[in-house]
Image 1 (tube, rainbow, N blue to C red):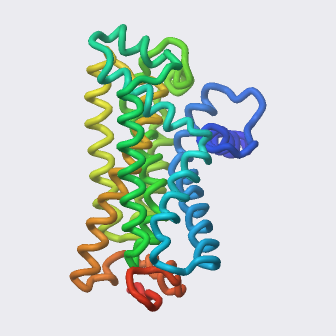
Image 2 (tube, one colour; image 1 turned 90 degrees about the vertical axis):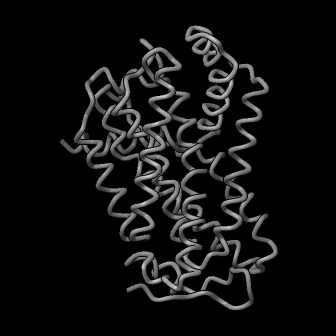
Image 3 (cartoon, helix red, strand yellow; image 1 turned 60 degrees about the vertical axis):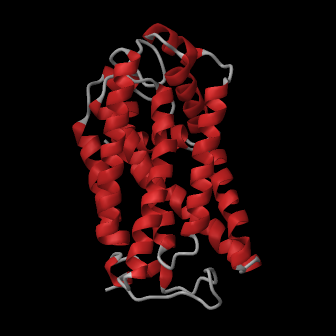
Length: 293
């Protein structure tokens, strides 16, 4: 009974991070149910990024260096999952734009070589994430967004794993469908991400969650059509990378709109947890702070 709880969590951690954890000989059911923990693994990513920001501010509390901090965060995200999601993104870009038939696209995804579409797609997504993070770090309530965006992007993988079929007989994602589609695990993941979204960001968090979910479903539907009826492991990693960029851009736009309108208190009941602490970062001298309502 206890293994039924902790085994899927350890599987999720071993799959989505470089942490040396896991369970011996996990069953297909445990692998499948691990999707329920993906948002919480994303929250751990957010906490790790927040720790890097804290360490940075202790050393260089100067707004001019925010681009360097943003670059560090982008690299940290990639290293923390052993570049697995970026590898999926590159294979996805090569296959979607380099293959003219279903069989050719699937063949390209199996190929370890990197093409021009892969490089262009990877650079584009990394640039978007870097620019959005560099800008988000100077928003007073941006730290709440920093904590949330890795969570909602990993929810998008849970969503695609549950809604769309897997496209290969053998592969990294085959265990997720061999034991059925566990809607209970997906429901747990959804409740988790909704609760954190509302607590940290209020209406902004819910809007980001809805848009990212819709964008993920649209991407999944388009990809299934291009791959002849199912998704592959590369598709899930690519979705995570693209939804990180989408979530960051949405957070940047929405949080700035709230700040400019003087509506910081609408960000979320827990948003003030991060900004009531005097973080010495911002686009002007002084420390930002506000009280959540």
